[in-house]
Image (cartoon, rainbow, N blue to C red):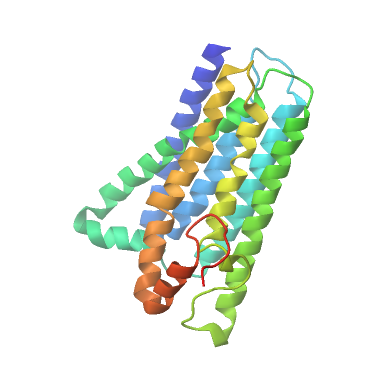
Length: 266
């Protein structure tokens, strides 16, 4: 089975590299870097679902493989569609636009490298899906259903947070204000929190004392936490919000948890 997982890892890495090269082409031709995140999401869903359904030596696809493939497909369709709708309504993503401005004339090359690094960094995510789908047991167990419940909870929480933010922004009375309602009262980034939470599904499905590969699925939530909290998620977004909302956002930072939902500080 070792060669099977190694081959799966390599195949997924190559697929992500090719797909993110395609994302670069789209970004360069449209000038709208928001499509990068859309393509990344659908690419992750495609590679993850394909890897989940891949069988070894012509064996039949197990119920767990179908379960995991359906879970990642639902995640990708929900998030990818949301980002696509948002991207269609803007001319460029402020985060990537800031990178392009910083890079100057060398922006096309650096963007390509950046997206390849993004694809490379996504390997722990798709490989965790691959490992969870190929847990060596044909019948579904309680923890498989619990993993599905975790993912659905993450998707639902993120969808609610996105809807609350959209409703807040579309109300003319809130122009120039900081969203501080619903889930946004307990976390400055509840959508990111629930995105991270959903990735705990795959360790739940795969971790077992008898399955050494399963422990590697912990890399998915660890990587997702790092990327959201320290790299492309919270830092550039909060920098943008400080520029546009100033002291109002600073006050929001002081009273509201950055990531994990907690009661506000008075």
